[in-house]
Length: 115
Image (cartoon, rainbow, N blue to C red):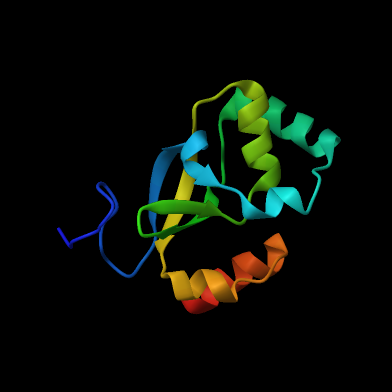
C-alpha cells in the first residue's frame, strides 16, 4: 500500500464504487445551495423502494472525502437515517481541490476532466 493511501480504496487511476459513511463526506457546496425538497422526497421514496441507483461522485484527497454531486441523493439518505451512501470515488490532490468550481454541475464535469 502506498504511504498515506486510504484503506479500501485501490490506488489505480480509475474510480471505484464503495459505500461510505455519510459523516465521512465533506460537502463544501451545501453552504451555497439549497435542495428542491420535492425532489428529495421523490428520491427518498425511490431509495426506500429500489435503493440508490446512481452513486454520488466523491473526490478523495489525502484520506478526506469531498462530495460535489448528488446533493439531493445525499440529503435523501440523511433524511431516511441511512448511515452510508454508495459513492464513485476518484483520487485527487490538494491542487485538484483548489481548481474545482463552486457549482455542483461544473465541479462534477471538472472532476471527470481532471481525473
